[in-house]
Length: 448
Ligand code: GLU
Image 1 (cartoon, rainbow, N blue to C red):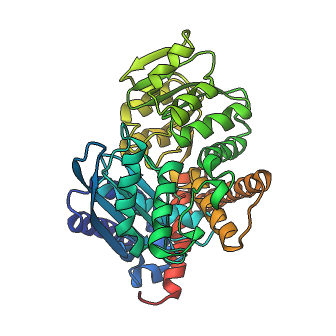
Image 2: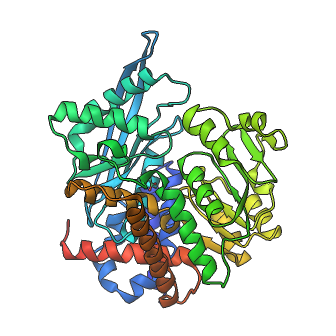
Image 3: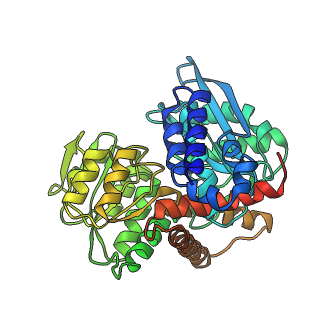
C-alpha cells in the first residue's frame, strides 16, 4: 500500500518546513519515520489520529537566559534549554547536555530519540532533554557552581518528580548534578530526591547509575552476538570517547574478556595494542579532568594520534561512545572492510544516515543507540523507584535489574524486527517497538 509511504514522506516534509535549519532533528526524525510505514498499514488508527504528526511536535519547549559571573567578575550570558517532548508514558525524562555546540536543534534531536528509548525500557518515563551552550571545560568548580545555580534559578519552575526529571549527559556529571540539585532544593524548600537522577549515592542516587549506560551497551552487544552464536569474549574492541559511557563500556568489555585497544577525546586517539589500562583512563578523565593524550606519559608503548579517526584501527567490535555523527560513510566502510562483526552505539545517533546504509549492507550486527544505550535512562528510572520508596538497593541487585532490562529490550527489538519482516534489523525493531508503546498510550488518552 503506497499511501503509508506517501503519508510518511509528507509528514517528514512538514517537519522539515516547520523546523528550518534543524538538521540533526530532521535526521533523527527521518531515521524513525523511514521504518514506520508497515506499522501505519497495520494500524490505520495511528494515521487517523495523527499520532506520528503529534509525536514530532514537542509538547513544550523552554529557552531561557543564563547569566553568570566568572572568577574575575566578568559577566557571561549563556542560553538554557529544556524540551518536554512526550509525556504519554510518564514524566519527561532525559539528560542535560552542557557543550558549546548545543542549540535547540541538538536538544530536539536528543529529546525525540529519548521518547522511543525510554519507551523501550518498559518503565514509566516520557521523553525530554535539555542543556546549554555553556562549556564546563577549563572552568573552575566555583564557575561551574555559579552557572548551575543560575541555570536552575529558571529551570526549577518547569521540573518536578511528577513533571520532568533531568539527569546528566555530555558535560553534566555528578559535580553539576550536585550543584543543580542543591539550588533546586534551596529554591523550592523541598528535599525532592526524585526530581533529578544521576545523584551521588550518598544523597539519594542509585548505585550502578554511573556505570549503567556503558554496562548496558555491552549487555546489549552480548545479546546480539549470542543470537549469532558468538560472544564478546576474546574479541578486540575499539571504543570512541573517554567519558562516562566509554569508561564503563570499556570496564564491562574487559570484564567479559575482550581486549580494548583504543579510546579517544576531542583532541585525538589513544591506540594501545596491549589493551588499554582503564585505571589510567579513569584517573585522567574522572579525577584530573585531563586530556587523553596524557595517557602516553604513563604508558610510553602506546600511541597518541592527534586529530585522527579512531575507526581506522582494525577491530571486531566497534562501540561509538562519543557523540552524534562521529561515524560517516568512509568510517563505516573502513570498519566493514577491516572485518568488524558488530557495532553497538553508546552515543546518541553516532552514525550518519550514509554510514547506517553501509552497515546494513555489510551484514554486521548493528545495535542502535535508542536500544543499546537505554541502560542509562533505565537505571535512572530505577533511581526514581528507590527515591519514591525511600529505599537504596545493593549494587548486585541493581545491576541484575539493569541486565534484565537490557535482555528485554533486545528481545523486544528482535521480535518486532521479525514480526515486520526484517529479522536481525534492530533499527527497525527498536523504532517500531518503542513507537507502538507510545502510540498506544497516546490513543488511550484521546486528542491531547
Ligand atoms: N543522557 C542519557 C541518555 O542519553 C540519560 C538520561 C537520563 O538518565 O535521564 O539517555
